[in-house]
Image 1 (tube, rainbow, N blue to C red):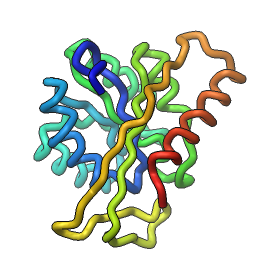
Image 2 (image 1 turned 180 degrees about the vertical axis):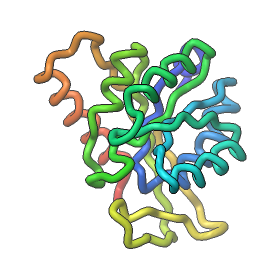
Image 3 (image 1 turned 45 degrees about the vertical axis):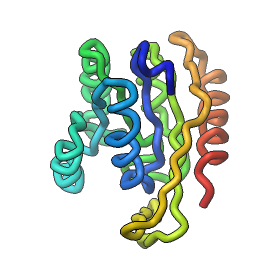
Image 4 (image 1 turned 135 degrees about the vertical axis):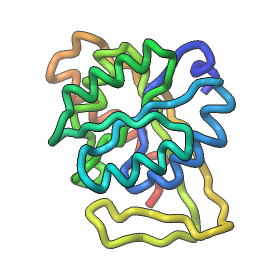
Length: 180
């Protein structure tokens, strides 16, 4: 994560690990890099609730998803890079399928030229919800482990074939550091 001091990056976290990601951002990324984050949040009613949580963690929400305002949100996120912020996105959100990389994160990396940094999070003691993503909420006072994967660079002019290979590579990197 040392490269984050020199330039922003795109943090990639699975949708079901958002609770861990918030702590990783507030306790690790922001203090160590001296940069705030802007993250994409669904334009749904559920997203409105998350916006308030993000603000409490000093994270800048940008509303949009694959199904609503996606293109505008990518442009707004790219503007946040010019302000020096890191970016964050859940590649399998807002509706899944779970652990499947959608096109948005690769498009964001192509648009901004920033590397994608995979985030791995786990806790032994957690509650798993019966939602599409099997959302995880760590028990209070349990230890949460966080790991960062190797950054993934996405060429600005990647072909469809290259993009598919990059999606597979990103998924592999994410699964390696996010055990069930």
